[in-house]
Amino acid sequence: MSGDRVLVALAGGVLSLTLNRPGKRNAIDTAMVSGLLEGLERADLDPDVRVVAVFGAGPDFCAGADLAELLASVGQSPGENEAHARRLGEVFVRMRRLPKPVAAVVQGRALAGGCGLASACDVVLAHEQATFGYPEVRRGFVPAMVMAMLYRAVGEKVAFELVATGRLLGAAEAQAVGLVSRVVPADGFDGLVREILDRLAASSGTALAFIKQQLYAIDGRSFEEAIDLGASTNAVARATPDFKAAVAKFLDK
Image 1 (tube, rainbow, N blue to C red):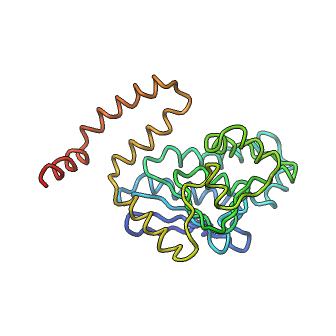
Image 2: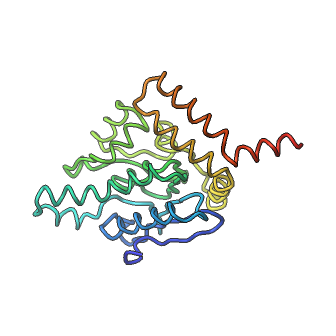
């Protein structure tokens, strides 16, 4: 898959996408973006995939964009650079639209675009010694696309301070501000992460799809509009086979 930049494995309903440039701290380049898009397409089409989990090979999750590619882009036209950026943006959009949970499993550093990649996922499981941050400003760069996820996760005041200073957060602080779903202890990390992923994979796929759709659809809506949308989703969810089977099983107890 795209030069093995992203390793793919399916086990127990969990499709693992492993960023595979450990020598470059899994820096995101064109081939990696293509690999992620291919993996997300498979997740969308394969009924055996119930959850997607994004890992980083080696000690770090992802250090952000490949600096060699960024440097080479200086001589390109604005249109060429925008097209290149939109390709990565498509990864974030597909993660959001995929009707299955996407989890980031973060060890080591998740920085710049790597932090953005993690925050684009629905769930972020962080090793207790993981580090998060957006240090682009230190290089005179702007984390423009990833602010779309950051703003929604932490709010405008925290988001501005993080991108304007470039300071890094430990896992506990990242959870406190809303960047991380759960901090996982170092002792037994792999097993605990697998338990969480297996629990997600064992949940009703239909219910998870509705949860994800509803959660993101209420963004920007008024309270009344969100309640109305929820009522419509509630009605449709009651007609699904998963719901009917679950109710019948409960009543048979």
